[in-house]
Length: 171
Image (tube, rainbow, N blue to C red; front, side, top):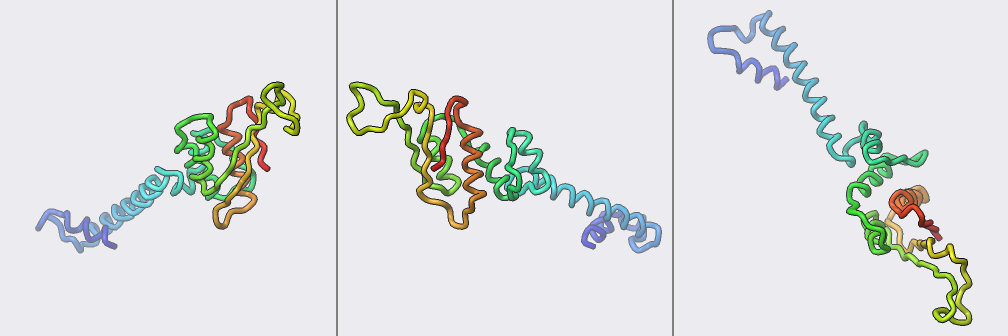
């Protein structure tokens, strides 16, 4: 054990016999404590960032008020936390496009408008007034290896961040 050797080298010269039976037991006990401490510190170091926080993801999710979808993988949960960390705020279409791009998606967001006399023409779609609060999100490009679950994670991120009166319809 390297810790054992380091502790022995710290003994005052001539005061103790580094290989004596009593001192060897004490040094071994101290070395085991340092090994445990090293393991705990390694776990704490891993918990400092959501990408390395395997055992502490629940704490990160609690901190950012994220509820993972049932069956979400560790990677999807970690990605949701990273997305929440990276957000600088905003409700614009460009903000949500950048958010999707950061997750590896290319999207188009359409905002259908209700039919208005003087602005719309014959042949335009007839929508109700409430349509102004709907975003139609088209996924144009997915990241390599994406699954339906990762698409659902993107939808969940949008639902968490969108304005309360807006409905995101993924098409």
